[in-house]
Image 1 (tube, rainbow, N blue to C red):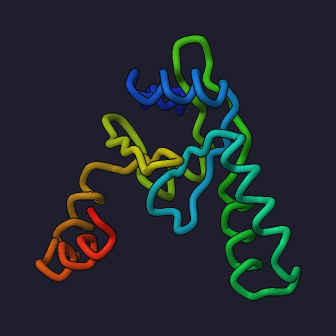
Image 2 (image 1 turned 180 degrees about the vertical axis):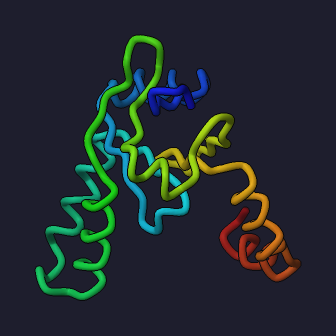
Length: 137
């Protein structure tokens, strides 16, 4: 993160984002603990699925409340940076060096210490491995 609140997307992810989806993204969070950066095309597909749900479905409303509160559309600039909204940066503790993870169809950005604490709270178990093996992983 730079001092203006822009995340420099790692080059590996930046190439995939630009080549497969273009520069437009949607930046948001569900919990405020981390930042999610969705390629706009992926975000629009998610919105279509939400639109198919009943408009008063409690989980749909809860999801939309959170992603709209934290979210905004953005664009990767020429240097592969994307602006993270200030209230989301503050809530997630996203400053300085951060961790960026590829989550199949979006990026997740974490404060280093918070992510390490998350790993400590929820350690990997043999049961986790067994559950994945049921899906061929």
